[in-house]
Amino acid sequence: MNINYLAATMVLALTGAFLPVINRLFRISGIQGALISSIGYVVSLFLVLISDKGKHVLEVFYTTDPVSILLGALILIASWMVMLVIYWITEKDKFVNELISALMISTAGALLLISANNFVSLAIAMELMTMPTYLMVLFAFDDKSFEAGVKYFFNGALAVGFMLFGISLLYGMTGSFEFSALVKNLFIDPLVALAAVFIFAGFGFKITAFPFHFWGPDVYDGTCPGVAALLTGISKSAAFIGLMRVVYEAIPVIAGHFTLILAIIAALTMTVGNLLALAQRRVSRILAYSSVAHAGYTLVAFAALSVPLSVTGIIYHSVAYVFMKTAAFLCFAVFLFVWGARTMDDYKGLGRREPLLAALFLIFLLSLAGVPPMAGFISKVFVFTAAVDAGMTWLALVGLLNSAFSVAYYIWIAKQMYLEEPTLEKPINDSPNKNWILLPLAVMAILLIVFGIWVNPVVDASAVYAAKVGF
Amino acid sequence: MLLEADVHAYLFLSFSLLAVGVYGLLSRRSVIRMLFAVEMIINAANLNLAIFSAQRNVDGEIFAFFTIGLAALEAAVGLAIVIVFYKRFGEVIPSKIRNLRW
Image 1 (cartoon, rainbow over the protein chains, first blue to last red):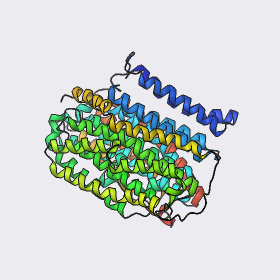
Image 2 (cartoon, chains in turn purple, brown):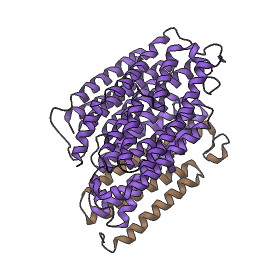
Image 3 (cartoon, chains in turn yellow, green):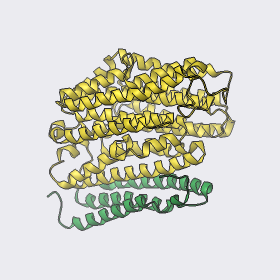
């Protein structure tokens, strides 16, 4: 791990840790809190961007390669924008500084998770990323968020317990915590295969893959949408990269055996996510089920792990996903705060009431659906091309069909916003400085379009990673 | 083939701990019981690490210390959530609260 990268995570975590203390001492207002944490984010972003030079420490546990620099910078930007929106929508609440502190510590955990190189560091980083979010889910302080918090805590604890048990079994069989120990010894002993099942079950809970997807929509729906943006976008993208680092050690050994299992899980995950999303009336549940479907698209790239293009597919989809899902939930959060809009009926005519915000929401929805100028399109192109290259045309066809399905409910939201007569008469929270909130969302929209056109950074980073794992 | 013979008894013990923990978590009788079940699952992993470390190398014992720390963290956060839950509903049994659909 590069020393600058380590410093970046420490700056972020320490800023987060001291924010509530500063609030206790000086009673800072929302704008001052946003300024202090913005300083932390900017310093941390700068340190991540320069972390290709400098000394290396802790090389056994963490590695700093172009993938972790690229994803780290993007996760930091997304988390920064989440912070700004949360400060804006909960300005009067007195626990907002504690919430932001948890957000920053969780982001530091995500930064460590995308560079983990070892099962020890993977488990620690995943706990650091997840543990603050257990408390963040309770932040709305109503019955639904308590329900979501209890459900999220016990499901997450089960996932962590499974993963730790799998790691301990793997250690017992091989005497090593390396990622490569798992795949190299997978078929030597049935207990190693069982350890792999436990570890992948733990990851499956985190990324809401098919048999373990049930908790996701309830939690994302029950908590306040700013926190759901963190859970769906940032945590899941980091977990994808962590899973990629586990799976892509020693590929030739496992490629033949794993392809079919992963392909079936991917097909089921996207189908279940899309079909259930079509049946929902509440916009937050539609977005939650579409995040399950997007986990399926990324698993398509994992299923194609015998070709180098799948690395590009995974990394590109994580890059696109961290922006579009986070930003879609943030748009929903702003609509909920200003207009109180929850269901599809409430969204009628909002395009006329809030033209700029609705246009940004439309950009994110179209990117989720996979429409060309945005990054969501090019990432799906890479994912499905990888599936075809690996000889699984049926999986690519299932994915394309699912994409076509998913356009239905995204376009439905757009139709409600633009073509219907308004039902909501007046906003519940009308603040004079409303246009400031467009700034962070516009930054995310611009980055989404930039990464949809300028593919070089992601392709270069994934080429370096693919060369490192031996394609 | 990778194991010495007498480890299997310990392995049986840790698998039973895991099974009891998973049963306690999935039966959802009371929030306190579920918290204990989480501790049992993590301690099953701990037991594994301690046993195998005697045969392999010292890495497992070091990781066991990390795992104990994680279990303590898990217990602290879990107790905080349980206290909030109890203060709100006056009850620790999830199935008795009607709007808690699970």
